[in-house]
Image (cartoon, rainbow, N blue to C red):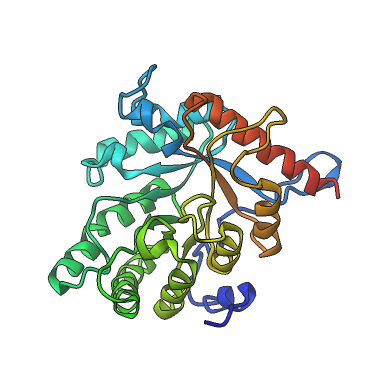
Amino acid sequence: MDKINRRRFLSLGAGTTGGLCLAGCAGLDMISGGKKQPFKISLAQWSLHRRLFGRAEPKLDNLDFAKEAKGFGFDAVEYVNQFFMDKAKDSDYLAQMKKRAADNGVKSLLIMCDGEGNLGDPDSNKRTQAVENHYKWVEAAKYLGCHSIRVNAASAGTYQEQKKLAAEGLRRLCEFAAGHVLNVIVENHGDLSSNPRWLAAVIEAVELPNCGTLPDFGNFPPEIDLYEAVEILMPYAKSVSAKSFDFDENGDETKIDYYRMMKIVLDAGYRGYVNVEYEGNRLSESDGIIATKKLLEKIRTQYTNT
């Protein structure tokens, strides 16, 4: 597959999607000295999954997530549907989420959706059900003020069969989401979706401007060069996940070269939110979040001052 130019890909949607957010939904905020930030930083809810699942203290309720994020210094968040799985159609609950976010000055960026079936299921009935299962999350995300939902492009069969099936399911969901002026973005999240060339080919096969990727720095198998992989996915990116595991005495990530990775992200022209997704074990969730945020801020300062 030929590498697509980011500008050309984004231009596919020019003039066709109204106010649809195509690239992370963030402008370049001014900072001291009249300079601009090259990217903004948000918090992925999964960073606190142990507390949200009640496996670590202090336990955390989903409704308190926005306040918790603000306490860490974030002004934007990405939700995970697992923490309010039965609330997608609960208007009172969603109203509380929206109010809590607004009260804390926190933007709701997207909902990461799991457990709703395989969008590329070989069984046409199951594939249709999976597509329709996501409709409620599109509607919930729109109500909360998000720009996207994150989905999984799971399928079965040969390489080409899975590409065709995943693209078909994604296209149908994107068509529904376009009616709500919302993006549908796919994370490299296991199986063939962690093959960047396959995922890029799926996005191109969908051929809709509200279909894109959410490159995650860490969700690749050992045989995949994660830097090359992220570079392949970046032309389609509408969000970016800064996965982290551990840090050295200088505050640098020990498994991922963040300086190299963020250069790839910025060289691709991305200027949206980069979400903190700590998934390590040595540090607590809170300490891991803080360490990841500090590292991203350090890199951002370097780019701002150059």
